[in-house]
Image (cartoon, rainbow, N blue to C red):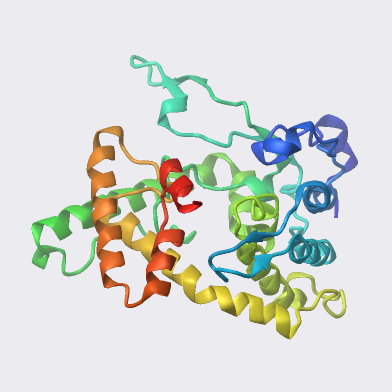
Length: 344
């Protein structure tokens, strides 16, 4: 599937300037950064570029979520990239009159500090920080900006506005404050969706057809090796394979399969990854951290102190050296100093 000739003549994808195409060694590599001819060409190139990078710069390394001694090999990632390329047809969105796979300029970091508004007219006067902007298929970029995005999933059924919980009046003051904060957040998120449905039908169509199964591999394929998280790419591709017939009906048997060894590698990490996920959820809920770890400047020192206290509690609760090691190595939001000390 590709964009229409008229669209490609008007606006093509690339060359890309997003960070995942230029970080570290990639900055000096002769990688294909576009232009690309349609969505399939675009998402396939992600894996092809990553393969070139690994072939030149991939080295065995420890993955503490799996083992303290067994090295993770670049060949594992290369095998996953082969599977990714076989599964790409299922990652392409269905064709629509709105042309949601057409190339679209999308601001990657839209938040209040990047938007200037005239205080008298309340009109937007400028938007800054475009340096990593990408022209890519709308289907893969669509979403709700983080400045109005609710922490929990919000339904696209806009028939009713969000309501507070039934027992709101029985809650303690702290619980009321938290509930009120979440209610305002969900309300703002839904308001954005309503405005999008009214004023930007193409984006609304993309949001309705957005399928995390399709887009997750594309989003992470150029990050997981450097972030030591190929577990998530393996999981995303397993889900594509398991849903192949639904995502790509009429195409015959799934062209990629996973062996018992693949599932074994996956299962060895699940428990430790769940510890990280549970810890992140606890931190984000109790301390108000955004998913990307950002906090309000005036709360930074307070939250940092609380996170150190929580980590100390988890270390104290560890029942053996293995659990203590996992807390040290896998604790989220570690700063550079902590990571350097852990490497010694």
